[in-house]
Length: 188
Image 1 (cartoon, rainbow, N blue to C red):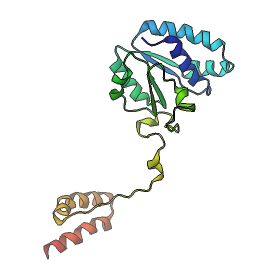
Image 2 (image 1 turned 45 degrees about the horizontal axis):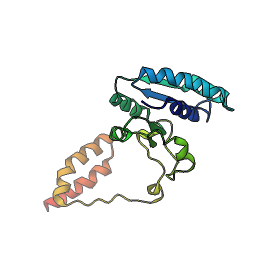
Image 3 (image 1 turned 180 degrees about the horizontal axis):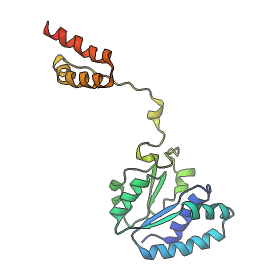
Image 4 (image 1 turned 60 degrees about the vertical axis):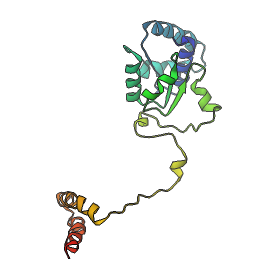
């Protein structure tokens, strides 16, 4: 089981950011919940930013108890957090189950603050659940790319009718004509 002192500290590290910050614990252990709740209160009382962290936890904090860790991963993917800490006995085993998280911190010795201040990876991360469709800022965000298409006559013929129908349905006659003129030329 996870070290509940670490879990509470890490939840509070997110809550102290802002009253609107969200800190969520997903676990399959009722015992962990009881210990974390007690530890949260003990650590919260010692924080200088206690009022901010407390308001954050009250408004946007959550503890979710699941039947197993597979269900925990499903919920984490739906939340798509900016930061996801996995504090299980073998956190690497959970990694293939995670699709939606900005940054993933594996194991009890990898608190999110390491990623903030010292570990090295970029820390401009998708927030507000946008990890469902966005990635951390990276080199590809600064590279201009283009899509390149090339069709043979046969490939064109395979898609011509589909393109015509969609263009006609959208009322874009000239789009449809780009296909029609080529179909007529094919017959020449």
